[in-house]
Image (cartoon, rainbow, N blue to C red; front, top):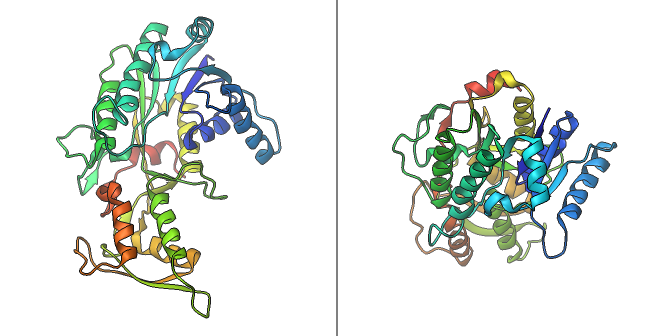
Length: 341
């Protein structure tokens, strides 16, 4: 068995894929960038030490390659490029930019989500790698409503932001790559932390709203019972569905599919069977932040005389406006067939 090269290995999903695939005995290589404070080996050593302690056993170590998806030949040295060409037979492309808006196609998210994908595909062609696992997003559907099929790709939909547009363009590029003989596409919804521990190392999207809510809570003074109270209104109905999925589930399903060839060459919506309603998110926020006084004003309602807290909240979450609505229904027939759990 040849090596599977994981891009985005130090991201939230990437580190779980390392854990699950290494546990399954899959030979792994990881493409990693150094930081100002840590070498690529140190970054992976830290991740592996975390999993060793968590699992109570030592996992097989991946081959660590220093590089960057935005560079030719992924920025690999001549020695590492020779090793990769000889040993890697598939790519699990998880690296992506989560920037929602861009000033130009030369900046993020376009640079990584489209330009980076092209560089990875060029590398595959040069290294004769014909098997590709692509991590897209369920939200390539854009602003569509109703039921979204796993077979749907470009149906003329309007995207909600540059992130969605860049991911759609990337998926179309991967699908049109003639040198890729086996393509499996994963479309996760909104990935949140571990279902058991709550662990996450990224705080975009869903967590940004939670962080902001907590910060605004701390601006208030608690009453005699210790509760924080401030009038605040959400421009939602309370019954909007949001497709939140824990990272450990996403990784488990992906790893199962990767290690079972009969499930390859399909598209998978990695989405929950039972989405979370916005009212439940609201109730959990109340309970965890001890913050009360908020209410649902109705979807799309323009608030009259907004409070300072309301102005701050909506100013800061403006970047996520396209998700401040009811989610579509994602068909997941392929996912339920391959991994009915």
